[in-house]
Length: 141
Image 1 (cartoon, one colour):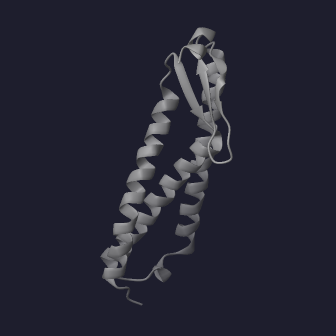
Image 2 (cartoon, one colour; image 1 turned 45 degrees about the vertical axis):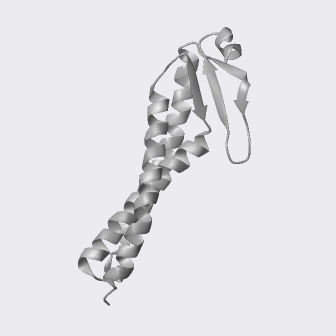
Image 3 (tube, helix red, strand yellow; image 1 turned 60 degrees about the vertical axis):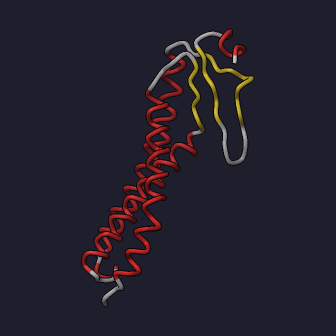
């Protein structure tokens, strides 16, 4: 079954901003977790993990749409094992995001950082904890 290249190009146009935004925020999260300054803000593990998983899902969707656009065929020809592989890759990126956040928290405690209770933000959709090298830095900003 043939698929319209116009339809698949429409999906590509919709996926490009989503891919760019999720990639930007994923890169920002990964670099913030690997840089240790005087004050370090660590977002909730579910936030970091879901960002990485969404980036992986967007990249996979973009790849599938490019293949569909080039070949002009529907997705019925794609083997089921490929879809299972893509799904497991998304789950692994979610687990990696969670793992990196937890390891960052452990490393901060090992380096002597303390948690600033006054800068902690907890909510249903967003939460973060701020760590500092000394208690004076918690009060300063």
